[in-house]
Image 1 (cartoon, rainbow, N blue to C red):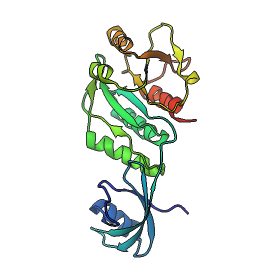
Image 2 (spheres, rainbow, N blue to C red):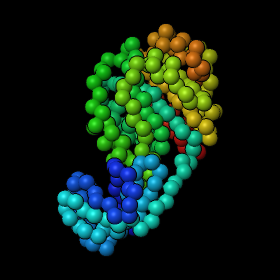
Image 3 (cartoon, one colour):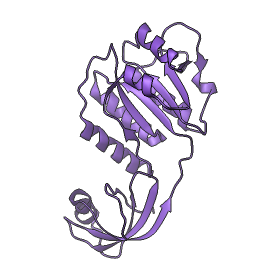
Image 4 (tube, helix red, strand yellow):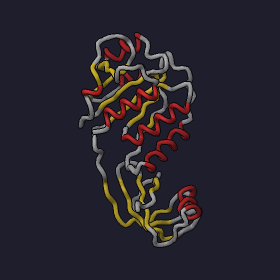
Length: 233
């Protein structure tokens, strides 16, 4: 049976670690773990810690780290830039699935046709943490604050840059590209798609137009499809 899995939000320079109150309460009050029982911790930066409960206090549980293991990413770094969506639950669904699939960076975009620009960063970050733990991963995606698409396009440093849009022009199929060992960034637009000016700006900064399939997808579905094609070997 897999060991319980928890997020360590602070670095663990020493072997003796005091966990935060929420994690302590879950370990002691919900799971009823006692001294001597083992669990897993991750810092979301590739480290997997195997630890033993040494003080089962429900507000400040202390554990002793017995083993440290660094886990490399299994594919090159994948970033998804996706417009904020009018229905926030659809964006939250995308964040969860992108985390499960192994996306390394998520860049919420503010585009000309973005309808809703409110973004609860703390809530979104917690969705990523929960999805990372649920899928037993040790890499937490880097979540950026919402940025104008012009800023993302002009400052992107990824080796391979893609933009998925609905304009009827020649495009490569992202399906034929697949996972690679270098960093890739895919941009997904809002419900009304990118404007011609936004597409032209991206192309002028080295982004290549790609198609995600034969049907028109919702933004969150397009983001998830792109994540699958770029992350899953």
